[in-house]
Image (cartoon, rainbow, N blue to C red):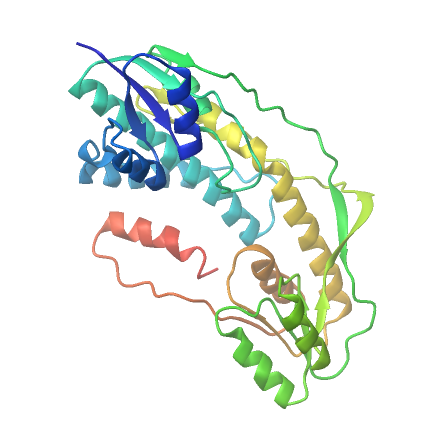
Length: 341
């Protein structure tokens, strides 16, 4: 006898689905909070861990390595931005690959009659918990199943213009001056040393509480922000479409959908990189730039310093141990992206 199931990536989505249907259904929770919600409320559910075995994770790592190695970065010219791009493409692939395997195993265990989905399609920003993409994945990758969409939503790409940025600091840097990318991960120790030794300190695009900011300003520390110049960005990022299949399943459409969602954030980061390079080109007398990661603005500062022959150091966090096989090597390489350039 076939079994109807529903898929949910949040408690809110699960409640929405269960209120909409009247026939018996077994839940497939796809995040921890939803899983615990099913246990606490005695909701009939499938535990994904019962269907996903160790060898699947090895296959997943292997396939994602092929995907990333085959990516064409187009006109991207920054290691930090390339890493951001590969991180969300890899993330979306793993989510989709997991879903395909899970539904296949559940169907082998007990034939699926119908799959209920909310139909929600929402995007706010990269890796946000408010993003809803499960329904899109199901409709585009599980077409062989009977799918019931309860509330069709269509994600609409909003054409937004991309603008140039500049760093709001007009003075020419002279004398003992350092830039610190963040006050996290013990970089505050460097700040204390610099204050004691009469260095001028600039902190770029860092979010701190008002009280801390007042204290830092009293110590002579300057906070620099990016300013939108309202000038249209001319050199927008162009990345070719991804073509990627695993056996008979084509993941291209789903991966390109994610790429298109993220182009805006990539263009903003690229515009800020141009602002950083312009700023550093005019201020090559900087004593040192300190960063805590090769990603994001911190990573772009290190890259800009290298181009302009300004001393820099990335004090990363975490430890990468020796790999014990090829799969572990790939896994650790992915994790190391946020620690090493």
